[in-house]
Image (cartoon, rainbow, N blue to C red; front, top):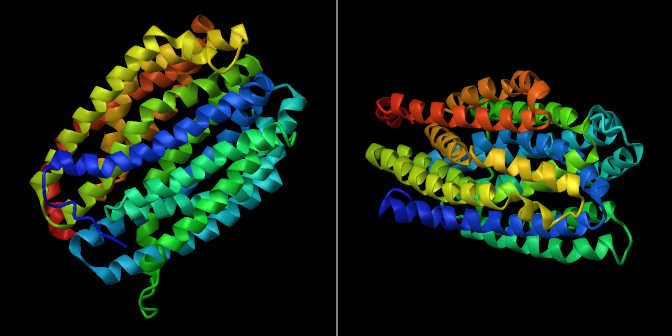
Length: 442
């Protein structure tokens, strides 16, 4: 496994070199999601709504898995910065084993409780609920492989090697794009076909990741993780996992509120989320880049580079999301109309994009701050910020709903994102003096 040194050279060049492959992976996934939404959208709003309902619980699984991914990423990147091979090996093995147990457990929960989970969304359409559960059944085994793919990508990033993950993700996305329309239409599997295509793609990606990671995992068998290593991964991953799980649970509760407005509303949000993800391609790449960059430079005790990395990354993130905001404000109807013809779905989706568009710049501040604090080994800070203001979405939506209808839900999301971004940026300034002492204790 090639290790990339993130502790020397131009800060902006290093950040972009690390982030662009991550952005490339996100771009490929975004392209697939849009193409897949196009194929599924042709089946009607009910088909889109069924996948949207199941997706809440797929996202919940990935949020729970961050319990392992975040902790392993932090410890491995810091150990790489210190050039401590023994610690790297222990943390990678601990992450891999814990990841397997968690993936199997969550898949079992989805299979056994799926009907109740889908029913909670109160979509009031038995046909849509049945489609959603069938999609969830296929997604359960898919998540086991997806868990490992996400872990491998994070570990490769900790080494400063994001290009390998991008290439493997590209393979999976292209395969998914080819198989999805084949399974949906010629084979007549409909929504279930989209799920099967994703399952096959993730299995293939897992095979490539495992092969490429062989050199990373096949070390001295005498170097094994200790119980303290597992505790350390869970300690660091718990705040971020709590944040992400709560974020998803709040999304599920809001989804139940959206469901009362009909399947068109669920479909509109699903399409809106897919289009919105174009903003998170760059933000997500910068999030992963600043986390690995900060971890390595902290381990190397290069404090000023840590601060400069955050400044460079926030400038890039705000510029990009500012441009996306303008597009969402100017042509929202056109964007939603690319995927469905239903007038009500287009109207709801356009309103979603316009309202969410106002918060994108602030969302970039939150996500970049999230990666920054993770690299420092301080995940409790962004987790606390996210938990407090994400929970506020529910009472805010209930307060505004009598006046704004479904738009109240969109405004509750947008306003909370604005506050989270501002508070995150303030905390970065408050904790600057702590970075030096952290570097001495890593």
